[in-house]
Structures are given as structure tokens and as C-alpha cells.
Length: 335
Image 1 (cartoon, rainbow, N blue to C red):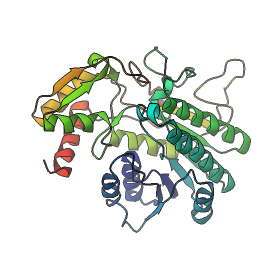
Image 2 (image 1 turned 30 degrees about the horizontal axis):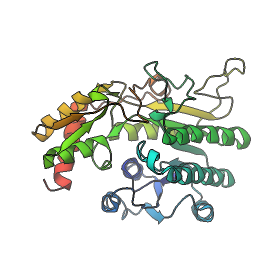
Image 3 (image 1 turned 120 degrees about the vertical axis):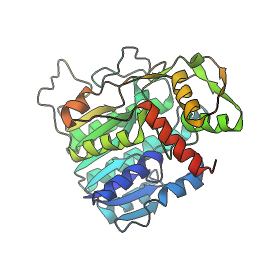
Image 4 (image 1 turned 180 degrees about the vertical axis):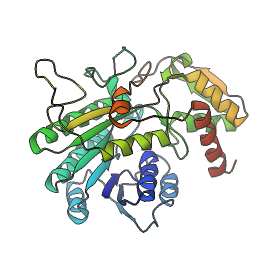
């Protein structure tokens, strides 16, 4: 297939591009290479696949309507995996405009491209943050999610609604994937694991919010990519049992689905830090702080639908995943 992957210089996008190329797909990668975090890291990720004969890279901003339209016109992908977004819950408190532009306007332009050029299937990144004020665990796609705690979360919920309208109006099959705390080699420097590792190795204090009592469903990057592949290869179809009188939030009468992708084995944040300390061979200097605005108390993915529909099985235990991250971290930063 010819697959358009947006955010292809990003943490998940680059790993997905490698996986698609390895199995013989043609990949059109798109990224705007913004300066939210190290552009050098993005370029280094890209170097892993940019010279592959099946790969083409485009540097453009999908929030630019003309550029996005031209992209679809020229390349006419069979399927699209939309991962490009302004990431980060906490940054959305500081710079909301970046989230409006990238996550709403950019996604709208992707939907239009898919409609105009009759893409077979759109798979896009949602987030566990959409569960917001929900407290029933594990989080299920069949539960209502109408109380986001950050603008980032609100944009991801909006993406699911926007996709549904296109699935209904234009028969565009779409699948949203709610990622749960992705970690692993080549991750972002603003994410907890790399932030903690950097501070520990420098002897600096690491700030742990909610006094370390968060539960997080940490999911290794390889398991995330495998879930994306499962979704991409299985085009979303209508739920023939969907009932107007008792609407199911995770499916639809339209060709639209939403899935959780998580490890489904939540870990206490302080235990996560302990795994990192063991892998680094260095103790952390921890400052415990209250819950921060926009943060969910706990996350835990119910992945029953992904298991039953695609036989998806995340298989990377947290200890091994953190060890793989540390191997990369020490190698990449020459520690």
C-alpha cells in the first residue's frame, strides 16, 4: 500500500514508518519539524528511514490548507495514519493556540484530503487524556468522555467527533486510537522517562506530581506500533447492532471505530521511577509535589475490543521496556 504517515519525524511516526517499510509498503512521511523540542532528535530519527527507496519525506505544516491539499493531490495515498499533533498536556496550558492550529485545523485539512481523494482508511491518534474526569477503571471506549481536563484532551476528543462526521457524511472509514503513556527508545525529551533519566544522570532533582501516587498504563513503543498496524490493516466498518436508543460511544452506524491501545497493566509512578533507577544504576533525588492542573489521576486501558477484533497482545513488561530505553538513552547521548 501507499501509506501517508503524518508526524513521521516524531516518536511514534518514525517507528511506524520503519515497520511499514520493513513489510514492503510505500511510505509518504510528513512533518513540520517545529521547535517544540530538539529538532536534532527529529532529524536523527528520520535518518533511520529517510534514504529507504520506499520512503518519501515532505516538510510541511498540515495546518496550511493549500499545502495539505497539494500533498493529497500529488501522492494520493491508499491509507493515512495521522499522528501529527501538538503534543503535551502541560504545554497546552501555556500555548493553547498551537493546539488549535495543529490538532484542529490540521486534522480538518487531513479529513478533507481523505474525502477528496477517497482514501480507503484513516487511522488517527487520539489519547487516553480524553477520559478526563472519568474515574471508573479500567477506561473503556464504550464509556462517555465529555469532561476533558485540558485543551489537549479536548482537541483529541474533537478529532474523534470530526472523524465521525466525515465517516457518516462521506462514508470515510476512520479509526481513532487512544494511546496510553507511550515510552521507549527515541521518545521525546519532554516525556517523563527521558526527563527523569536526564535529571538523574545530572544529579538534579526530579519532580514527581501527585506525590508519586499516579497510576499510569505505560505502553512500550513496539506494542503501540503493532496496535497501529492492526488497526490500519482492518478497515473500520459500521456496527450493525448500534442502537439509537442506547448509543455505544466506541462504535457507530457509520464506518467509525475507537480503540484503546495500552499495556492494560497500570504501574505506580514511583515504581516506574524505581525501574529507571535500577536500569541506570543511579538513585534519583525525588521532590514530591501535588497533582498538577490538567493531569488525570490514573490511567488504565481496557483493551478488550482490540484483543477480540485483532488478537492484539502487548507483550513488553515494564522492566524490559525501561531497560531498552536506557540502552538507547546511554548510546544516543554517549553516557
